[in-house]
Length: 305
Image (cartoon, rainbow, N blue to C red):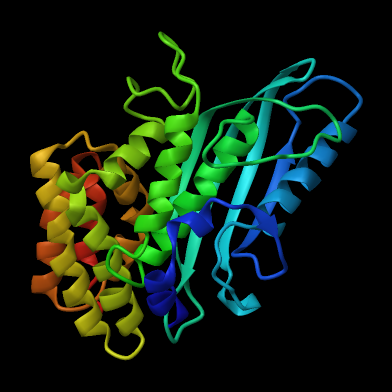
């Protein structure tokens, strides 16, 4: 697959020059919801949606050429909560998906709601972006998640294939303003924000989480169409990576996000197959996701093979 080779050819400097071409990387659904905001003039929100869509889908964030079928599938829903002039308070619901080899199924890679999206936007404003320089919170936040999506996707096709993209995401986070005493999503003091996510990802202490992304998807899900039993065994094996991080630091935020994203899928996978393997998977998941223990017990009730 192209991502295997492309990862080896990436040059960091090429990631830091933004330009628009037709071979962009993402196929992203973008929506802006303003139902919670009073006022009859809704045109600014439609214009914001169009601007965000064009920024995300038309910007060339890397030097890699993607065919249409190779573009990364994702979605971003901006839910505007309040507005004061040109200043907006919002949440973003983010979803990243990855196709599974020889199937019509797309697996969730990242499901997350960022509740700290504060930005300034003027109707008709050009969304300028440079990962090395903070220009605006709207483009820094969206750009951060674009590179996060790229990194997660590439990690799932090649061990540590997302390194260059995660490096850019960290650059964006470091360039963003730090506001003492206020968690604006970038603060180093918060444990559930953008900075915490990228800090965990790039922390070598948590390297098994990166390995999980590859093993789970490439060695597990991608072989299940041809050999479901082997796929389950590979996924069971890599669940130990999650347990090792949980035992090291149960508060690791990136671990929590992986578990929340993959929980339903893991339950579905281990609701069938060899009972011994299913029991082992349930025991691991009950250790790292104890609040959902009843769901892992329930998945063992199905006697299907």
